[in-house]
Image 1 (cartoon, rainbow, N blue to C red):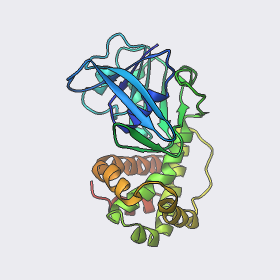
Image 2 (cartoon, helix red, strand yellow; image 1 turned 60 degrees about the horizontal axis):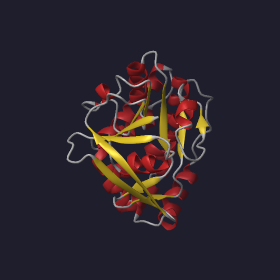
Image 3 (cartoon, rainbow, N blue to C red; image 1 turned 135 degrees about the vertical axis):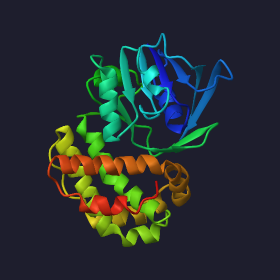
Length: 274
């Protein structure tokens, strides 16, 4: 198959080197300065792949967008292929993708790792993508190695557990010690977010998020990760305040729509700079 990936950031690069060699892979870019790009990713070994560069979406069987479906030009790239997907866990973006797909198969390809850099791009701990949605079978078949599949609600509920903590870090200017002191509030906000997403996307009601788990994650992750966690979080999420705020607002809207409490999410939303 011909697979077009929208974007060429770290996640797009890991995705490109994770797809089976039998597929032709391209990157959709805003400005084409070359015909192709050699992509290198590395964990324990280096993976390389030459991808085509293009500004057009015609002639591709599958388009997977690592950019928001709401970003300028992305809807046009998603308009033609038989199968469309996005790397998103933002509820309103998932609904937009569903709308853009119409009668065509669509799905989510959600990364379960940290990634950064270029030439090569690094990733940790595993280059694993969770595939969800009506096009799961087609999307899973694109990969060189088997990837997990899940109901549509599952990756969205998963994000609702972690992104309120990221929002708390953003509010604390990515100071881990300050964020740890807010563990009870962040856990309560995450619980409300997970309940709202499960209600909105038909998943079972999830377990509450423990404040002890939040505090432990903020303590242990910097010790386990082979990179500077505060620097990574600041550089990766610090420039995406609008997306974090959008997720918080989506969870509040879903919660209110289903008559669920949103007070902790509202309080957190008021502390996060857009």
